[in-house]
Each structure stands twice: as C-alpha cells, then as structure tokens.
Image (cartoon, rainbow, N blue to C red):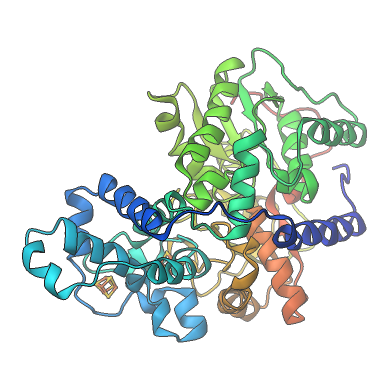
Length: 460
Ligand code: SF4
Ligand code: SF4
C-alpha cells in the first residue's frame, strides 16, 4: 500500500478542517426575516401534508413505558428527561390532535396551539439532541418510528426557516453550487491528481462507460484522504472498471441533514445523473453514514422511478468481495486487538454488519465487540450533522462518552470506523476529553493489507 497521507498530514488537515467547521458561525448570513405566524403556518402545513394513517396511529400509540429513554445516548449521557425520545414528537402530536385527530373537536379545548417559542425550543430537540440514529425505534414496544418522525420534524422546521445556523449555512451552499467547505471541482481534481502521483497509476475520471461510479465527500477531499485513496487503490488492485465523475462526486447531503427537501433531492439527483451518464451498474458511496441512505433509499425518489444501479457503501462492497473470494487481504503478523464502531445509518439502517467483520478477520485482527454493537450500537453522538452544531457541544460530548466508555472497556489498541462523521466526532471528542485511542478508517486499513501481487479478479 502506498501511504497517501501521513499521520502528520492527517493531523494538520484535521486542525484546518476543525477550524473551518468552527468558523461557520462567523460566516453565516442572518436568517431571512419571516413573520412568526408564517413560520408556524409553514411548520404545520409541512407536517399535515406528510401525515398519513401510519403516522397518525404512531402519534397515538405511546404507552409511556420509558424504554426509548434508555436507548438514547443523549438521555443516558445527561439524564435530562427533556431528551426522552418520544418527547421530541410532542409538537407534532399537538398539531395532529388539534387539526386532524377524530377527537379534535374536543382536543382543541385542552391542547394549546403551537407558538414561536415552541418552535425555538424544538430546534434543540430535533437537531442538537437527536442524530436520527434509530436506536430508540428498536426498543419501542408500540413500534413507533421516532427517528423517521424526527426527520419529518426537521423538514417542517426547515420549511419554517428554523434550521440551526450551521446546517442552514451548509444547506444554502449546497443549494447554490452543490459543494461543501469549498470542495469544488478544482479542489476535487487537485486531490485526484495528488493521489494519482502518490499511488502511481492513472485514476479514471469521467470515463464513459464504467461499471462502477465511485463517489466521495468534501470531508474526505479535505480531510480523510486516506479513506478516498484507500478506496481507489483497492478498486484498482481488484481490476474493477470504475470512474469518478466531476459532475457527480459530492455525496454529502445537507438537504437530508437539515430537512430541506429540495436540496436533498438535488444532491441525490446529481449522483443519479452521474451514474446514468457513465452507465454504472454500481454506485459506491464513501465512508460516510448519511450518504448511504441518501443514495440507496433516496435515489429512486429523486429520479422519479427505479434506478438501474445498486448502491453500496465502501465497507459493504469490499466486505462482500472478501466474503466471496474476489478480494484477498494479507494477514498481519501482529494480531492487533481492535474495536469496531457500526455507523447508525450504515448498520442499523442498512444492515451492514458482517462485511466489516469479514475484513477484520481476513487481516487477522482480533475484534473485541463493544457492549452495544451491530443493530444495538450506540451512535457516536455527532451524526446527522450534529457534529457541526456549536451549541450542541455538551450533548455531543455526552453521546461520545457513552460510546467511548464501551470502546475503552474492550481493551482495544485502536478503533476502526467506516464513517467520516463518526471519525470526526471521535477525533474531536478525544481532544476535548483528553483520550488517546487511535481511530482508523476501514478503507485505509484494507488498502494497507493488499497483497503485493498481481490484480485480483475483476468481477463487480
Ligand atoms: S433516534 Fe437516536 S438520538 Fe434520536 S431520540 Fe432516538 S435514540 Fe435518541
Ligand atoms: S418506548 Fe415507545 S411506548 Fe415506550 S415511552 Fe418510548 S415511544 Fe412510548
């Protein structure tokens, strides 16, 4: 494996990226002035437009057992009852009871209409203290999908112009030019050229046609270049017919994270169009949790019909190649003891559990599972855009602590992750807490264990 980024380069990039993220608050323009009554109306209309029988039933189904509280890292980390998952849906429930419930003629007398103060308080509940990780959904005996309804809540908040400043800044930037943190085509190509020089082979860009479309994100272009380089190096090693595309590389989707539906569809559609243009059968999304559902579950909606390609995340794609013998990795002489973090959107939402474990087994590392893992894994605390929200720092640190305590208890020498947001939140959490456990990209680990022989089988 060619070292595409040294530890020192990573540390420097981390400091620079952290500075860029922290400066958003200074750069964001003031939110557009909207009368309070219009904000309230937009919130209600967005929710009422989306409600169906399924949602209505769920809003009435809670039996107040409290199980969801014990599933949420923000409640566990703070013990503050306001972070109980079901309470994050209180506002939706009030709108439902007053406007649509079969008993609304009576409930209107006992249920207050929502106010601008309610919406202001809602920001913290559905952005800062919920990463839409879905862990609470698993334990709810009434089958309430709290995470999905938080997503609906975010859409209603976005329609009311009440996103947190940092997510609004990112969403507005993507709505304008599709990029994040200035990772435009020039920077993308600069990075590709740099990787090309380090890897010693030509990296296909805008190759038509290609079997596989490889995508990335501004986070990897700026910071986690080892993950991008590792993905490209491994695909080249396998002899896969792949390409990157200059008009469809950015999978970060701040429309999805902020709740802004038009930007969500625009960003997903750009990847769909790039895949159609190069006639890809497979789209590989980078090590980034939310980009996976944005494409795998959102592509058909953005396109308006089924799409002619399958979507895999990096760990899934390479893990399957290891499992069916298309990719052989070299075993390490040192049987490293590691912990693995299953990213919520890739694991709990996407069912990708066996694949990263197959990779670790193939290289001979000893996996010590954390107390919660696979579908019950705790979130890192910074998902769903939360890692950028400055005022949520205390909550993020509380969530980080819950998960990091489990990781440290395994006695692992390092932590393996396959999501840039998780990695970022762990790195920031380590700095703030004075922790020191190394956190490594699975894609980079795979590339570091490629046999130094001829190419593997090229089937995709
Ligand atoms: S989805 Fe996750 S973060 Fe949100 S309330 Fe449920 S457990 Fe908490
Ligand atoms: S677990 Fe389900 S039923 Fe129990 S309090 Fe939470 S939302 Fe209500």
